[in-house]
Image: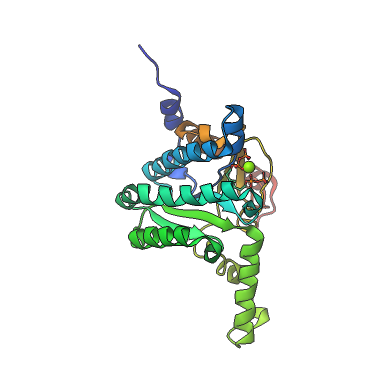
Length: 260
Ligand code: IPE
Ligand code: IPE
Ligand code: MG
């Protein structure tokens, strides 16, 4: 008799009551995936869209509440114009192709980043997708576009400075929750789990504030090869981690802690 496949085995290990509320992914490795196959980099971006589709579906099925995917950084404009154009065209194509399924799956699309600097056809497609999914109450899909963690903090600082200047806020009133409330992710929990494929070990200006206590899961798998099974593996590994948030582990507290 055939045993369970790797996905079933991982699903069996997964505790559905302790899933991360928020998963963030740096969708990296598209270019290398293509180059390893002797193809132009843009083929890798195209193949990467299928991975995104599969991961979004899996998050919907599992009931994960927030998924943030890094699609284009504030630094990615440094790439050749043809590659940037292809990425923008792919985004537009993805949104028009996927909108029915996203809407049917109760996904709420929430683009984050300096969207005002995106080309007009990309902004139009985003407006369409946002308005189609505005009232959806399922997975919140944060699509990070022209996103930079530093520019997000600059935007928050500017917004707070304006409030202070207008006399609506005093500097003493500013605390961590005030800052968090002026980020693009206002009102959302911080990511519990960050996934970076492609074998690189860096943040690349992603969610600098929000990742303070996020668990990192890194894999050499390139994004276009990333499948549901890899997500499940990341979730199972995540559930084996002990998060301390600067405190002590449960064992240490019950054994020797002074308590308070
Ligand atoms: C990620 O893949 C997609 C974007 C940054 C837009 P890359 O294009 O960075 O692929 P690699 O890292 O060069 O392989
Ligand atoms: C991060 O990947 C941005 C996205 C995946 C959209 P990069 O490929 O741009 O990051 P670096 O340049 O390798 O740090
Ligand atoms: Mg890259």
